[in-house]
Length: 411
Image 1 (spheres, helix red, strand yellow):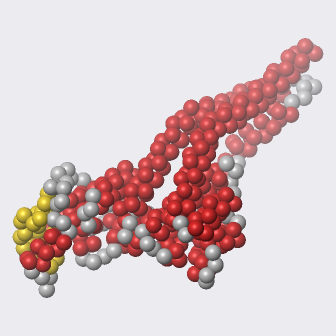
Image 2 (cartoon, rainbow, N blue to C red):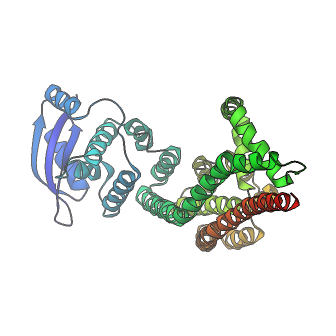
Image 3 (cartoon, rainbow, N blue to C red):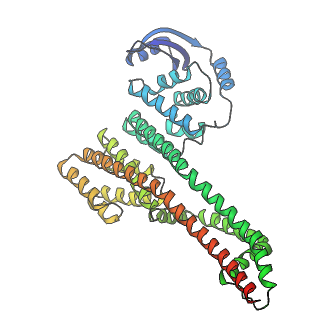
């Protein structure tokens, strides 16, 4: 029966590494550490019952709450340790034995415990925290299958940082337009519910006066909002519930994901993001010796867009039947011709992974340009919409004032 041993060892770079291993004898622990390039300094047997009790005290039940910055820090640190040559279990032990306490220390401890017990990392991650989403777990699965876990983690860490930076830039770009929208909404409500009733009351008191069309429309909107607000609220709640029920069906989720890819402005950004993710992951898998069909299968599992995933599954099946990758890509009509041509050159010359990597770099640059242009376009569009709204309100007010002056002159 395997026993638990706590060890302290010195790695090839001279750093101290600590952890716990399960072996039948102390000599097996020494041989295992030496095979990993580490020099054992201390090995102590741990009583199984006390270790289990201690572990249960240290690791309370229930998923951890990890913020985005925690996931990034965990991924970055683990990828650096793996890239330095440490195996997964010693790398997690090093993260577990950090001086400062917190969720990252606890997440590392849980993951190391389950990995030591023989569970795959991608299976253990969702048990630790829901913050490790489907994309994260599938990428880890692909990395474990190809032996390139450190590379995939490093790439995904860069992707997560880019997403955080993009959200921050988007929020910053929307601060000024948001204040404009709020100001225009307040002005609109003041006009409809305060100023307009006074103007209509004045016009109604003048014989022979005819209310302008703009005033009539604004009055109708105000009366509807005041008198039917309960029905309007019920309609909004019912519509939201209906959309949620519709979205629960799997085929509707795929249809919605397809619509997102065709959205004006944003659709192209989503498409290019999926291209870059697919190209980078497949290139890395092929570069680490994974066969093309298996690489396509693993890569398709990383796609969170269901419509894109379905297309990639068809490509995988066709390539498995012996068809060329670029021929299958053309048939889906989802990939730009330029991308297919770039990949076709690599497929013809036997350097497919390099061609995929070059295509990923090219479309990553195009994605950055698209995002920059989109962020620069948001503020002018909102300003234009607000200007039109203010102009309509001003025109309606001027119409009412002009009509009032005319009626006073006629009298």
